Length: 350
Ligand code: 13P
Ligand code: SF4
Image (cartoon, rainbow, N blue to C red; front, side):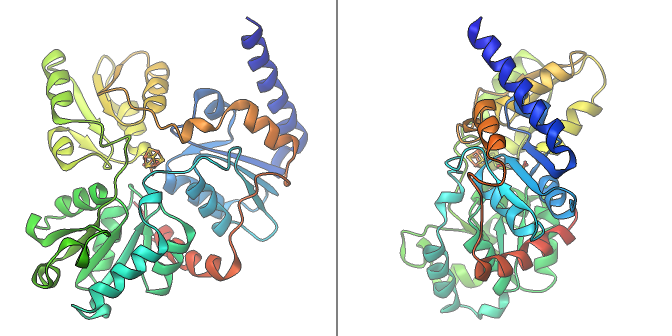
C-alpha cells in the first residue's frame, strides 16, 4: 500500500515538473518502456520516430530520453546546440550495441579491403550502436538504419555500391536481405574473432551482404517451436514479430516489423482477433491493456533489462536536476560525422 502511494507521489511530482517547465521539457519514451513512463512521456515511438522527433523539436531546452543509451546518444547528435539530452539511467545500455566495438569494426573493414575494392562496399550501421561507429559510417559515405527503414537503406546502398557491410545485427541484416530476394549464399557472416571473419577470400568476393555476428538476446530467445505451439493452441491467430528475431522465426510469422509497425498491426486488426507478438514483454503487456477488444498474447516471455533500468523514481531524480545530471554528450569530432550518417537515415523514410 505504502509502495503504491509512493509510486503515485512520484508520478504526481513528475507531472508537477512537467507543468512548471511546459514546452521547455520534452520527454521521449521508447515503446519498450514501462507503462508509467510511456503514459507520462510527451511522445512514444520506435527508434526511427524518436530520432525524427529529437531532430525536429526546436522548442524544448531539455530533452529527457527514456530508452537505452544509443537512442539518447543519437538524440544528442541530432538535437540543436541549445538543447541538452539526459537519460534517467546512464547504465541503460544495449547488449547488441556492445557486440561491435570501433576497433573490431575498423579491423574488419580493413581486412575486407585487402580482398575487394573498398569503394565497392557500403557500410550500414544499425541504430543500435555507439556514436563512433555511426561516425565511421558517415566518413565512409554510409548510413545508419533502424528496423523500420532497413529495406530502404539496403536499396539505397545497392544502387551505389556492389556490397553491403552491415553491423551489428546479423538477424536484421539477414531478414532484410531475404525480404529483398538476396540469395542465402550471397550473405556471409563476419565473426570478429576469426581471421577474415571466418570467411575465405572467395566467399568475400562473392558476397553481396557481409553480416556482423551480433544479436539481441531478447529477440533470439524466440524459437520456432514457440510459434508452432502457439499456432496449435490458437489456430486463428496472427503472429507478428520484430526483425531482430531469427530468420526461422520470421519465416513462420504472418508479419514482421519495427516496434511502431507492431503497434499499428495490433491497432489495425479487427476486434476479436488473436495476435501473438514476438518482441519485448512491456510493449506486449501494454498493447493487451490498450486493446481489450483483441486478444494480444506474447510468443514467449522476454524482457529487456536494459530498457527496464529506467524507472519513475530515476526519471523524477533527473527532472529534479534538469540540464545537470546524466547528460549524454558526444565529442564534436564524432558528432559531426555521426550526424552525416544519421541525416542520411532520416532521408530514407520507412
Ligand atoms: P525499434 O527501432 O523497432 O523500436 O527497435 C529498437 C530495439 O532496440 C529493438 O530491440
Ligand atoms: Fe538492445 Fe535487444 Fe534491448 Fe533492443 S531489446 S535495446 S536490441 S538488448
